Image 1 (spheres, rainbow, N blue to C red):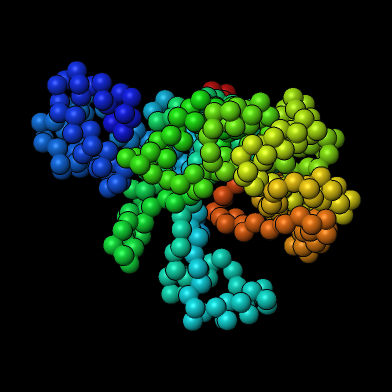
Image 2 (cartoon, helix red, strand yellow):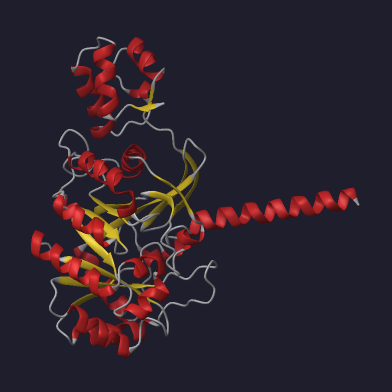
Length: 399
């Protein structure tokens, strides 16, 4: 079945069926601007045309297996048409309303403010970010990532990447309605930080970005699209050569080759840290873009003062910004713990002493299984336990 929002299949079909070309504009308006997921809901088309389109096209063929809501996030577990599973996360960035600024600032100082305190009364929705998957599973095998434990299943085609955003916009329309100015709330920022290594699905990722930036489609700014990579150096260079002008985030996670090989073994063995940083220098020089360095804070492994000084020396002359990410503990990796808050602050100051700008990332969704692959992992583990219990019961009955 073809996707109705995919111009590459829709336009030839309309021509072959002698359907006026302006119908394509109506269809794109309905899907991208009005965030419709059902062909029957496209009221600008006649019923006969809708019925005809339904024979060969769908807008949405995702099955929602689970949805986990939190005050700052919504996490979706989707089953694809082929039965495989992906995760997509919406993150809600809110501003404190002026009349509550002093109260919440004081409560944060006292550490009595929690994410559960966010409400429409105290906070105003500012922007929405979507964290999308580019693969089913992942072949990179970072030791701290649940998705890697699930193995690599397939690359997502561009349509399934884009559909995550279309689905999200439909959901946002129902959850938040319109803004004060009458326009619709929609995804503003897209980050390729979900399941998979996007650079290992390069061609489909790039095609999906074209749809995101298309003024007749999702029309997202290049400044609002970020590719997060674990360091696939040759594809970073190709990104530059292909002039794909979006933001880049590097999952660095270690300032030396030995630790990087421990944390991200597959990528680190293919491209050592010296070659990787040469590529990063080429990227910043060629594009003029500032790079974001993602750095995970794992207790007694990535958060020591020695490591902090190494990270500061590595990045002090480079055009970038470090995001420290508290490790999200989960049952798939019971031996890893997140760094203590005080230790994260000490580490931050150590890196900053070298002239590097550093931010401690907000832990949005920590209470709703935000970590990539965590929800899928729990579903799989639950199914395995049920299968084992069923086998045990069957064996008991037979005996």
